[in-house]
Amino acid sequence: MTNATDLLLSRRSVPAFLLREPGPSQAQIETLLTAASRVPDHGKLTPWRFILVEGEARARLADRLAETALAVEGADAEKIAGDKKRFDAPLTVIVVSRAGPHVKIPEWEQVLSAGAVCMNLMLAAHAGGFAANWLTGRAAYDKTAADILGLADAERVAGFIHIGTAGEAPSDRPRPPLDEIVTRWQG
Image 1 (cartoon, rainbow, N blue to C red):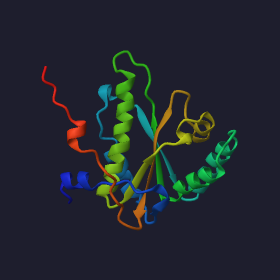
Image 2: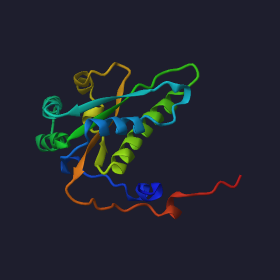
Image 3: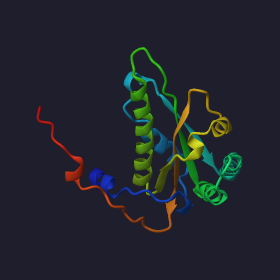
């Protein structure tokens, strides 16, 4: 097993259109989703859920989302065609945030929990030998896309997590030097 620190330091996002077969098996998907679910969840509300997009459904969803995007005035057909390629990845897990008003648990904490699910899923994919990319884009914010996905009125897409195998090792991007992003509170 990979040392956890090494795992965290080696994680990279791989562009979704570069993710290929093999993707995770059904048993591996269950492990990924179980790991993704092990996040802070104040009040045990489970303010998120998963939608799996696999097999032939990938192309159907890509086509339907492209149709809605093309219907928007001033739509960029070339960008939309590129967005469709995201669903070439063997598996897309749509993490849906179900955050909402609660008498005790702030909605913001529920949203953060859904974000933590996305990150755990990315890390679990990496630990399992897969590559992944967490994207949102227009489809995450569009009402018609939400209807296509079967989201309830109060639900929102926290992320489209595309998972597969990278054809090549991903390059790293520049990371901010810690002295530029860390301060120490002194009181």
